Length: 395
Image (cartoon, rainbow, N blue to C red; front, side, top):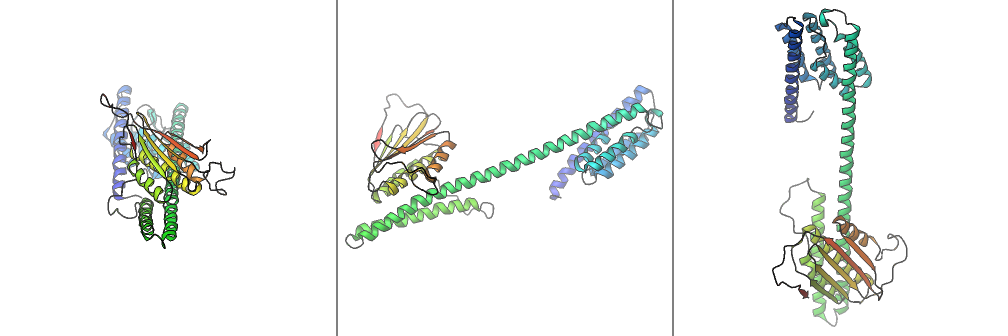
């Protein structure tokens, strides 16, 4: 049924179709009457207009409208001795029946429409063989067009549903990656901070207090990021109370490095090239790659050190995270049975980087440790002023 506005919109469209059909049928009959030197009466014109006006109700009552158009057209043919022709109002009514009714109904009405539309044409009461053949051919064209249009609309609808399902699946994968990044990083940090606080509680209360502060901050940040994801899932249920918090980016990498140092891993952070703003999605991907790589390093590299290197190039940004811990590759098992460095975290990083057309390398180093390196294309930066040199920032 639809809303009242939708019904009015359909009525306006049907009105345009009805007016157009009436105008074309009137023009066709008048030209034919002039060519044949036959009278074109006002009664015939009124019948043609009335037949076209019935098209206003063709969607809810297609069979009744086709019946009315055939009856009015039959009377108009008897009153006028114009040459045979297949009216536009009849074609539209038959098209609607073929588009909205069952095949058996369409076949019966088509067999009835072809001879009835030829009765009385050319001053002959009974339809001739030529008139029947012409009308039958017109019916086949109209019904064929309706069938093709109906099939095309079904394919379009199926493709639309498929694209909607794919979008939902992609959104679920994105949310799963976000949840993995949040849980894997923050929960690991909280676990390490809790262990450090417990170990230093007796002999170093200040270190234990600092670890508890980091633990509290990490838990608050994890809750905030998970709340953002829940807001995405609940979008449409209730209005947003305020603007969402900004997504992390390259400016937050120092915070990851500080957390890594407080967790017991000696972490070095360097930035090369001219620092410039990045697209938010690219900056978020860089942040997630570093977050996942440092989390994996703390899990698998023990007390090893790590190095984070961020490089700005004219048309890309590169990030590299290396550690000098055990670098043996994990056994060739599925990630579900061996959630090591080859698990879902690396898969999520590869998907994120590939989404932006970049590349990711993640493999053990020859001299020990593990290396994760990502390169992401970005729009060309503005040309640097003369004399500008490549800078290196070490934190």
